[in-house]
Length: 586
Ligand code: ADP
Image (tube, rainbow, N blue to C red; front, side, top):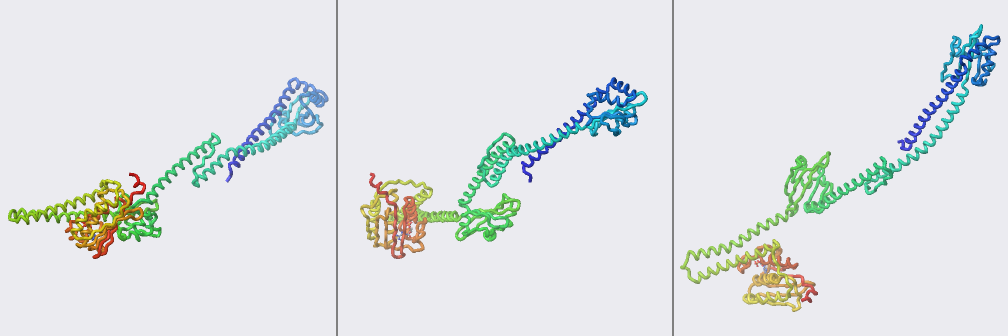
């Protein structure tokens, strides 16, 4: 590869060579012509009609040739100097009769031949190395030819001198030219080199650099455009980068799983949610058929149109997964398949719970309604035939069933309010011990009726708590009522309150019927009852513990149930105590 510098030097050298050749040849030619013209002008001026007549007169004398030579040599304007310009007197045959340089012969030129024919010979060729003039002179008896010959030595000396001057100046010019070309090319090459380095950096991904614009010419404009281009590139690339980051963050954190398969069915991308849902690590080794082979055919998916997709279900362990599969075209070489995985386990569970809940509610309401209807119908049918005592009994059943329905509806409303976050809490700061004591007082009579021994251990300095007093008392009441309900008459029920770290607790222990171990995890489900008949009998709705759990969750509290079937149950409620400093502020 020839560098720009070499090219410039070569151009300059060629230019100088061409210029010097043209100038030199014009100069040398011009000087030669000038001399030739000068020679003939001199000859014309000398060989006037008068002078020719004089020569003719001398030719007619005895020593014609000698006389003529004398006259010719005496004419200084002819410039006869013996070394380069001589005069010859020839006879009509071209033989030398006399000459200024005593030479006895002369070569016959075209001009001499012309003079032999009686005309003045004065033609000349620039290429010839002589200039000559032949003038025919008629003597009395003989004809002569006066022949002036210039060997062009002066012209040749001058042109060769001129040639050497031109050659010298050519060499000098070339030298200057090479130096100038080097310097000038430096001006051009420096910004081009900077641009080359710049483009290399851009290709390596370094866009922040900006090149100095040192001129206003085309290279300056190119540099400016380059700077602009790298700025635009930088902003475009950072935009693309941002978009990519956004997408990869989305991909990483989205709750739905995404797996992309390449044209051969290998995993090419996947997000953490996908491997979590499928319970397997998705490396590039994994193939579509190994993961979703049972649900769909990869080849069939590839033939789908872009707008089409396939929806199917998959079960992984206890997870229910919904799969959406669609083809995508990666590039011209082939596409792939994108699978979006949606975990519908919770959705299905909550649908199931909702269905069960509706069934439970209908069932719970239907039993008292049936009772109310049948008692009311009996009353209507029998009318006054019924003894007043039985009538009263029937009516009291109707009232108690109506009360039961009211309780169920009230509890359901409370739960629904929690579900929709619409439960309004009247949060105050109150002594926890007081709430416990209030409940103890309220249930004392009921416990006595069942001949239970009810004890209360509650330190006087229990910290206060922040919360809805009525609801917290409702929680404790539900637990103590359960202990009374599910303990055979004459049982032992102990209520113990205290502190554990920065929490207060109340524990209700009974020696009642207890709860089988398998039922323990389900106690907080709505309408869940271990002993349905007993619960209903004692006016329970099966919602008490669910409501207690909801209220405690709202108070950042907790409820734990331990039980041994047939021996007794221990229920503990914990709640965060109000902070010490807050206690001092009234
Ligand atoms: P219910 O209105 O039926 O009492 P709960 O939600 O309060 O409903 O209690 C759910 C079930 O848990 C009860 O039906 C009962 O079978 C069981 N249970 C609750 N407390 C006790 C206890 N102290 N001893 C035995 N079983 C209990």
